[in-house]
Length: 405
Image (cartoon, rainbow, N blue to C red; front, top):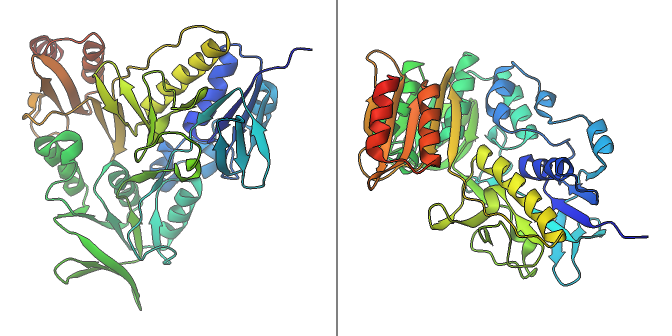
């Protein structure tokens, strides 16, 4: 009897779940084991900082599928099973329970965890936003909160702030930089994103570095550089993430603050792939190494990984992943989108109606279109995305934008 090939996927969030599902859609008939360190079914993260916090959805609404789905698809799902090691010679993944899972191909999809402010681990009332349990805890805390402080004016912090304001809670956002989102979209566009906070009654303080958080008789005090403090009932910290790669130490997989992959999403070990927030890969479209923490990137990489697993096991050539970064954020009822990459050159505003948050700006990459950012301009932004796919010129983008306005 011929042994069926086995694929072990470590990480049961978006990337891991999508890879398992894609393998079955590609008619892979071998064994698939999906390992997750959380007790929950695989779930989607975008609703956690939006509809779940506002109360539009319950946490369980974020599940991708019911438990029956995994049985129907022949996917062995192991929740609450953290991986602690990978052996490329023996082709095994070791779990915290001591169980060893043999593989013909393995996928690393353990994602990332939120950065925390030093000294705040376990401090009551201080939260991060990443997991289903994080979202449920913040949602419960908001029920009794009058004032919330959000540390970090990035997209996650801004989404949490918007959801808290939607619930009628007073919100102060503290941003250490002089302008939010400069690295992501540039100063000019960052100012437009910042204006949304003011429009909806959220206090945004830039240049406000946090030195510490301490409990008080009235709740919490967030101490700022310079000696001032902001009182609140609840703090949510959104200052970036750290890839979960420590469990790979000693495996032989090459890392550099992320798992290094080639253009086919293969790691330095044969038949071991990585994807999502923890993967740094060579993108042939841009001719450079990239790490992208976006939902769409993870979905597209999972399809590429599944295809390349099937191809490698069949002795066929792999396909490269040359995805274009794309990101969206919903804040205060507005859709913010970024496609491509922001350049250091000043963007060109091609849609900027008065008395409206709506806008679209284009970024130049030499004589080509490098990227586009939009607020409430979904259709035109998608046109720019199509132009980026075919490597369109900047002048062509300007002409296209003129026709779309």
